[in-house]
Image (cartoon, rainbow, N blue to C red; front, side, top):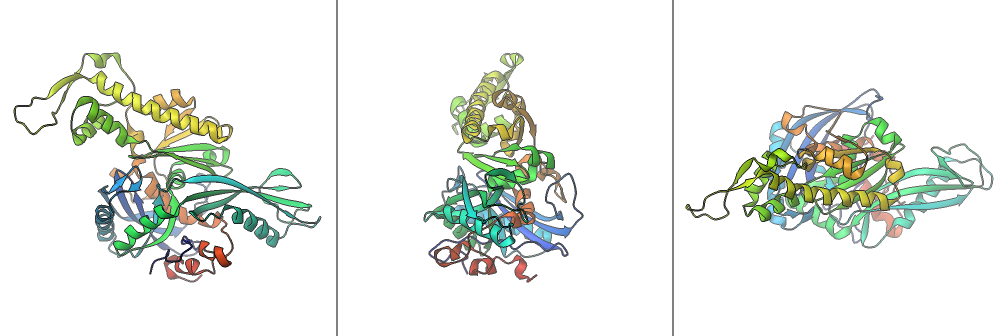
Amino acid sequence: MSLFGSSHFGLPRLKPLSSKRSHIVSVLDIGSTKVVCMIGRLTPREESQVLPNRTHNIEIIGIGHQRSRGIKTGVIADLDALEGVVRLAVDAAERMAGLTVDSLIVNVSAGRLGSDIYTATIDLGGQEVEANDLKKVLAAACQQSVRQERAVLHSLATGYSLDGERGIRDPLAMFGDALGVDMHVVTAERAALRNLELCINRAHLSVEGMVATPYASGLAALVDDEVELGCAAIDMGGGTTTISVFAEGKLVHTDAVSLGGHHVTTDLARGLSTRIEDAERLKVVHASALANSSEERELISIPPIGEDERDQPTQVPKALVSRIVKARIEETLELIRDRIQRSGFSPIVGKRVVLTGGASQLTGLPDVARRVLARNVRIGRPMGVSGLPTAAKGPAFSTAVGLMIYPQVADMETHAPSSGLLSSFGGNNSRIGRVGQWLKESF
């Protein structure tokens, strides 16, 4: 049964995890470079100081990944091709875990992710704030975010105000005349989400929940202090680079640009007149985002494009490869810098930036990022997960690990109440809410 069958496209909502029992969670990270399926066992744990909001230990018991096909800059271009890759990745993870998957948590990069803050205020008449008042003000903020052509992926209360005094974390039991809330809402185009769900349904699987890619990668790569004090996570993927800004323990802003590691590869293929796969190998083996004077004298051989035996490889200075790469990397980072500046969240990000995603592994990238962004930069690898094979411990797997972490923070979100038009946006009583029940268990 399709979760999204209704005319008002409602997203499945995850039920909160029980803190007393273990769960098996399956996730699917669909990227422009690779598709990753992970199956994890989540077991309850003691609260820790280092990793925020982690109620469970995560042990990966199955993993499968395939080279992406049918997806371009995060957008589905060929359903059949992508469906085939999804099947292969899920099948490999199932075999390793020794169990069958029927539903998954999936990431969303396409659909022109939107990030907006909505503010709502209700009258308290000098009374103390009760749980019902919180519900009311959150519902009023959610109501504003409803759009016919867009679906809500995440809605997080980023802060409350009482009588105009902002920055209140928990106003419960406090007195005042007016209670306000700022709500951060992440949305995506419904058509893009329908296509994503269609692809997964065609592989005989259902969607348990959808998570914006920047949110997932930020959850995996940031530590508590960064999430608390304010930090940007920049996920450099193959086809897209996404930005997430966290502060006071919550996601406060997201953005995405359609540039990534694959653009560097195609620049090299064009500039050096070689095949895409040869350009990719050159990028991984020889390329650096930093120019080095010694590279002028060092020659590397470039395989020809044609099949003709007589075509000889050409020799070019290694510095040429680095110049091509540097130009594209600087352009991408300048775009990111300007987006952060324009968003108004620059002061919140402060000096803290974490780079993650496969393209962040390029030699010299952190140094260029420090210079262009004028901030401290570190490479973020997925944290707080056991059982990952060595190959999957790098920044390229941050989104998949973030999807594993997400169920532990899903209950921080507020969704529009289910009534009439909004019923499809899932409250716990709606059809969507029921279908999305964790492992069909009732707590």
